[in-house]
Amino acid sequence: MQFYLTVKGIVERDGKILVLKRSALDDHLPEVWETPGGGVDREENPQEALKREILEETGLVVAIGRPFNVFTFRKDTGEFKVGITFLCQYESGEMKLSEEHSEYRFIKPSEFAELPSIPSLYEEIARYGNEV
Image (cartoon, rainbow, N blue to C red):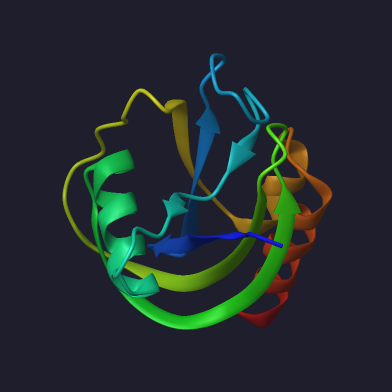
């Protein structure tokens, strides 16, 4: 079976985490809230990929910390993905969303349950909130 590697980041800044709302035009889960991240390119390590994805999606520079979670999912297109979520710390930059997302928020982890998302991400962020 073929699969693709994806990376996500729980980006912490001043006690809050960054969440992004997917564009209404996205081919997978449009208008759902998520953490930043994306695919790992050939010959790129996961941490490099995550730094690049966060910078592309938000304009922010982050420090990549330890792996926090491993997950799997199948996109609406049928692609099977294996993902790694890393804990990240905001370092610098001003928010500038790419066209992939329509909104962003810095929220307390407990507030994520109020946003439309997917069950596995609710669980991941709740577990993060319980650990910090």
